[in-house]
Image 1 (cartoon, rainbow, N blue to C red):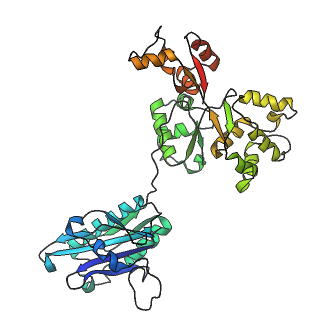
Image 2 (spheres, rainbow, N blue to C red):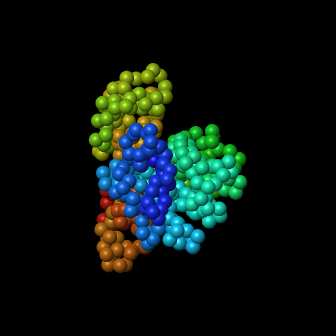
Image 3 (cartoon, rainbow, N blue to C red):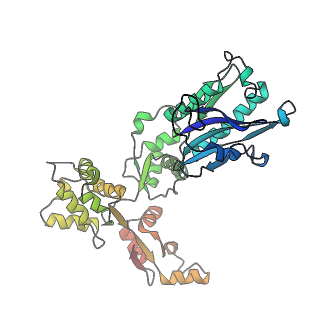
Length: 406
């Protein structure tokens, strides 16, 4: 959020001076305005309008108390018509030091370039006191509207005069998403049907229709009749905007174990137990939340989901009659209550061949590339279209192959 915005310029007789500010009195004192300033402008003046070597580039400064960050783009226009043959100014935005400055960088650059062009065209900044205010909007009004619109709507479109309009938008800064793998399962975090229209990309629409929380990326590509590479690109685009989550394949042979965060679930932090109950219960009366705690805490690295189910059924609790097990596991993964124990194949002979540079083992089987302990069974299953039982039978052909769990 923008805490303040101001226009400063260098005057040959007065030095650096704040000409306009919003809100009033946030940078320098104003008559009839009694409010604390964001920072001491006098100590920062030399950085607001710096030496020419630092002009015409984006500059960010932290004030001495390290509470606010000042973003600016000082401009120096050289022309004989100005005093000292140059005109220097800066439109600065003040934000908290904890706020990500990346979205505001483009705003500051746009302010500098727009007002530079307007100054070159009709001396909008230097001749402000002599202009006809009825023909164009004042600078004070502009920076006030810019601050309010960006804070409230993340964008602004402000007509200045007949020839100029200020158009700016704040774009959220997202981290680049991790690569999408064929064995990942996307889960939507929003209702695409409510926002999708005819202007959407055709490939994207076909891919979205296949996202159901069950199909992996390879199957989505097949059912949508879209190339696998294009499917991954489309899903990565959705992942970038936090529209989907990526989980592992759910199989009854998977192994899951609780994390320390399961304590938050047992303590019912933020009403997590009721949220889980609404997500996983399917039939019959709604059971007490105690049963959900019991299910999560009974997961362990020593038993698969199938064995976990059998354990509770033998104890007189028919899980499948009340709980959607897939959704139960997904909820635990999404909330960080449990983690997946991956299975990988390791062959000492193949690792030795990698060290020696041969990259092969006796027989030259295509399955040998998965024997370095870095490939999960999910990857092997998806890329070779084989069930786990067949994979294990195939791996028995190799000598000294072990399956490790991690």
